[in-house]
Amino acid sequence: MILAHAEQVSRRYGEVLALDRVDLTVRAGELVGLLGPNGAGKSTLLNLLVGLRRPTAGRVELLGGDPRDPASRRQLGVTPQETGLPGTLRVGEVVDFVSAHFPDPVPRGELLDRFGLTDQVRRQTGGLSGGQRRRLAVALAFVGRPRLVVLDEPTTGLDVEARHTLWEAVRGFHAEGGTVLLSSHYLEEVEALAQRVVVIGRGRVLADDSVAAIRGIVGVRRVSLVADDLPRLPGVVATEHAEGRTHLLTTDADQLVRDLVTAGVAFRDLEVRPTSLEEAFLTLTADDRPAPTPA
Ligand SMILES: Nc1ncnc2c1ncn2[C@@H]1O[C@H](COP(=O)(O)OP(=O)(O)OP(=O)(O)O)[C@@H](O)[C@H]1O
Figure 1: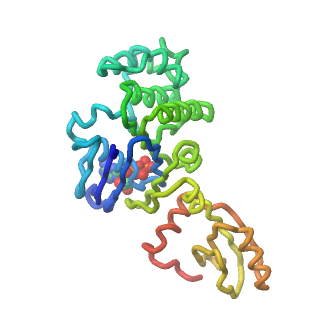
Figure 2: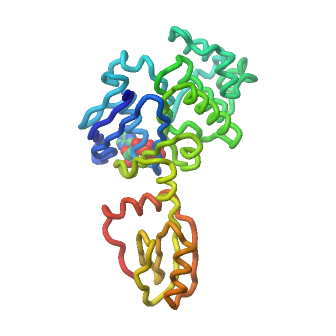
Figure 3: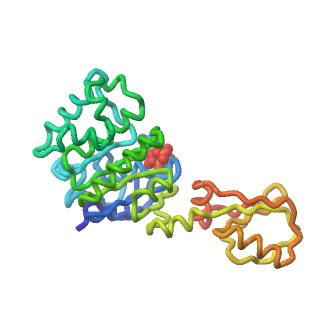
């Protein structure tokens, strides 16, 4: 059963085309990670799916209806990228307030325990640390036992322990049959939670695949060297020339170095380093870019 669906969706903010003909389908029981660098369009896509914004073109459906219709959002739990909590209310009061909107809310103690906030129940939210506030904001998405939870960068600003607590809570919800769509900058986060990853870059879906397949794409290494003449080498996904150096992007740097030696290439100043997620995405979108300027 399809819980959220975007079909050929575009969204423009003035001159900026934030989303460009995006398709995405989330089915019941899935835990889908939306992965992409800053400005890729993740928040825009999530906001369209949960009815916070309207698409410029294309069609969006949530839980069988229009996301802008409140009835479609009844079984949805959302934590946007930025949330505000009333600073003078206590944690327990905020949970009670949100719970009161639902027929069968998760009991307060159980919810706070799942998100590691039991000791904060009597604290005013204004006095919480940034990480505690974020955990509370995410916890509130689960209060009403939603069918679908949408989390926009849920662990931003959390330390390792808090992040793991939150991951456990998300996993627990999923294990009980819940469906989750979450965005992240971090492959490790998506890897820890999701089976399926949708990679988004510059407003487009670049890949929609298993975590293992995406790991292969973003596991690209940059082998950089100085050489006058390079033969064609297997396993090179992109080649760039800059400031007298040649940069070879590959998913298997060890093999590439062996191949360079075997081919008898006279190289010097060899460097191997991981590419950032951003660079890996640029590789994926290389077809769209003007060719790099030769040195
Ligand atoms: N309200 C807005 N007005 C103008 N431009 C916007 C607006 N919201 C987003 N954009 C632009 O749309 C593009 C996509 O932004 P979006 O926030 O969806 O990306 P993102 O992948 O969520 O990024 P981040 O990881 O930094 O949150 C960016 O170029 C951004 O500057």
